[in-house]
Image 1 (tube, one colour):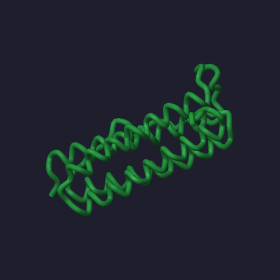
Image 2 (tube, helix red, strand yellow):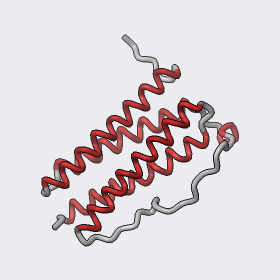
Image 3 (cartoon, helix red, strand yellow):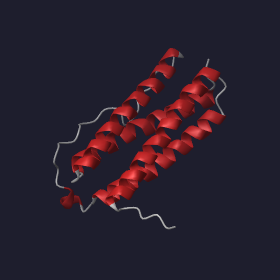
Length: 150
């Protein structure tokens, strides 16, 4: 049986996962660079797996929840990013900020989860989120959008 706090955190994390899915699918359609497009499509798939895991945890504990971000019309490919005045560098920067936020939310959830099995699942997702941030960070460095100062 989940505590009220655990339910709240699971719902918040589920909302964050669906928001990431939406952002990454949208960003894949907006990106001019094929490497960036591919990365966002891959990350959207991982975020979908995370959302499914969280939905299953809630469902298995008798909690029915539909995220406000769950249903939407998927973006059309090859949209014109210039009409939005957004660049690949800006898209990547926003994505890195999103992953930092999502990972932080998982950290709080993990520290306040009673059930050991659920905690382990959340830790696994958090590790993957940190990997997503690293993927985005590396793409930014590769493309010259993030210059590390030594």
